[in-house]
Length: 341
Image (cartoon, rainbow, N blue to C red; front, side, top):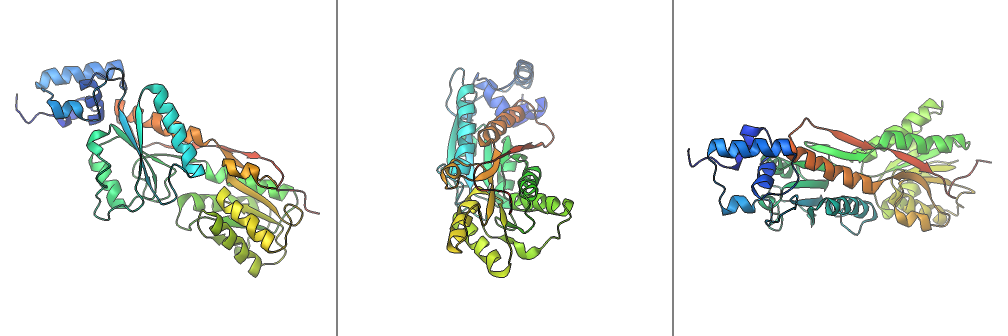
């Protein structure tokens, strides 16, 4: 048999990922018995003899491990201390640990435009990747060429070239806006994150649908995009209030935006919820301690991380068509909204 036979050829023969072959070579869990048998047969039929490098592909040898994985964050905000991304990472990490896998976190704030990852991110040592933030298209292409099973987690980029898991933005935003409408509000401001962010766009769409379904004229002066941060929320609401009158409610398309909106309301001498009702989105832990506590759309961020990790494992066992999973939200009513008088 030719010396050119390697993991790639075994993977192609079986219709699986190279990571799946690596797991079988290293006698790890993470692939089904049927797939494992098929890979072993292909190794025998092709005469493949794994060398030391091949045995180390995907991480340290360990009986019972199901591999080593990376959570790559391509955003200055997307770090483990951030309430949103931190909870998503925690969900993925806890789930991976329960399954006997190892998940490492890599912060990549400024990816190389040439499509090169920093030295600390060694794709050859990973069996699969979870990606969040806004990686460049070149970076995505580089990861795709590695053939590593990859899932994008709440990707802010429009370039979604892999499986993805994100909140059900449109329905959740519709629920938030509908709640304000049912309380009698019609002058409802929308505060969004970066205008080219997919989540921001979808949350605006949900807001717009609810407003139009209620027969309320859509006033673009009530719409402001900044970034998903407290300063962004403060600036966004301040801008809306400076150009629009009669605003009685706000849907902030992200809890960090809502936190900033509280500051802008106070700066304008407005009481919450007496003068201004505010609804957020995500239900990150800090908003439960605002005064008044924030009404928001709860998203199970741990579930987003766990679902993403499960999907990586599914792709290792058998490459499949792209799947874009949405995690639904629910309205959590606290003290920041009230009936319009």
